[in-house]
Length: 113
Image (tube, one colour):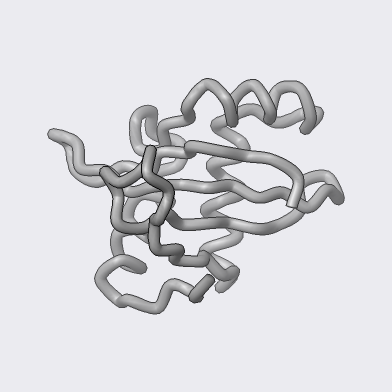
């Protein structure tokens, strides 16, 4: 794992995460949504997106990981968030995608760290 340091990618994360309250900028796949609903009381995908933004805004690390899994070769990298929600350390795996409206973050996995 390498901390994300690329200024252009950091600017993309800044742009997308700062719009956490606008639908369609952070897209949650079913598995991480179900895990969040079952394991983190009092939070939904919108509030978790806000926590991701706050983590980034405070200078929290995002890990940039070269993608080597054969089923995920559509992306050269994925980006990992690690922080606490309700005192529970979580891992949130994301990918960046382009959309007609601009870049989006897709949350592909979430579980205990």
